[in-house]
Amino acid sequence: MIFSPQKQKFVDSATEMFGIGTVINKQQVREASANAGVPLAGWFMKQYKVAYNQFKLPGESAPTTIVNTPTESAVVNLVATNMEKQNLVPSAFEGFVPWGHFKDIKQIVKSGIFYPVFTTGLSGNGKTLMIEQVHAEMGKELIRVNITIETDEDDLLGGFRLVNGETKFVPGPVVEAMERGCTLLLDECDLGSNKLMCLQPVLEGKGVYLKKVNKWITPKEGFNVMATANTKGKGSEDGRFIGTNVLNEAFLERFAITIEQPYADKKVESKIVIGSMNKYGKVDEKFADNLVTWAEVIRKTFYEGGVDEIISTRRLDHVVKAYSIFKDKVKAIDLCVARFDDDTKESFLNLYSKIDAGVDVSAPTEQNEIEQDENFEEQN
Image 1 (cartoon, rainbow, N blue to C red):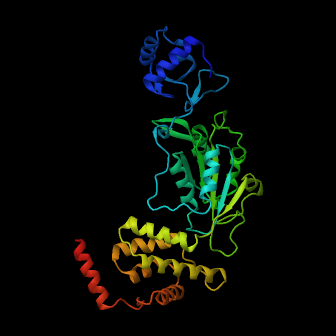
Image 2 (image 1 turned 90 degrees about the vertical axis):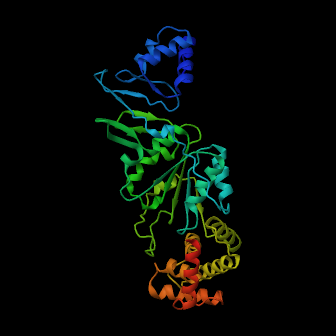
């Protein structure tokens, strides 16, 4: 917004004293006016009043007051959430190995161009983590929203909430992302319903109209939308991803590109597993190589239709963590494949025993139990 020189002096003074988009009272307006060497900013208190003795400084995060017609005094203000004060840059993930489409995602984010991306692939291969770590490396904010069948317009764009005894409109994560100019991540997007169609104008980069408060939200530069899913939005015919839905074609068409994320190759996955071992403080390179080979054989068999289950990169991380706790390879693997049916679990364990000849996958031996007891005593 462009102000006259005198008004700009007040705005600059108040922003420097209290921060951009801050709600201040009349006494603080008086102090900022004096500091700027201008008369009391009555124009500001009239134009930017959001409640009794409460005035919102203009800025990128400043919500616009909405006046209900025909009574001009009936004002409904958007509630500024505490996200304004939070740092939404994802934390760096210890042991993360950039691979696959990491550079492509980074290039899209770096361009600053609005370019919606749909990332699909089997569970546990690092789709969400890849997007998060791109933003962590670049220091760019990311708002992740986990989509379910219940997710609707109220969850995404915002709705009325009871705040300190008053009913006020609270912006949703989509509006927050647009106003901050950060990336919106729709995680597990294919679990959503046709209620996601409220995002159509958002996916076009045009902004969105909040019907409940008669306000148009224009996205700030740098805003983008990314989605992850286990399917391509066409449902899951084999039943592996129960709950996924067939998404509206018009919705899918608004994503500029679709990135298909496979599991990492053996070389990369070995680095990932070693990184996990370093993180958990239990490094065994031979064990890491055996685990990756084991997972690779199972995946090949899965793709050929020989088994119905698969060992994901995430499950290898679970095995490594269990190994760091129990100090027993067989027990770590046994516990982490126990989620499968008995026949699958047994076949997976037997396969590992063929890859690692020094391992007996039968019931834990007395020697194993003694070693576990000794390790427990050492740790305590």
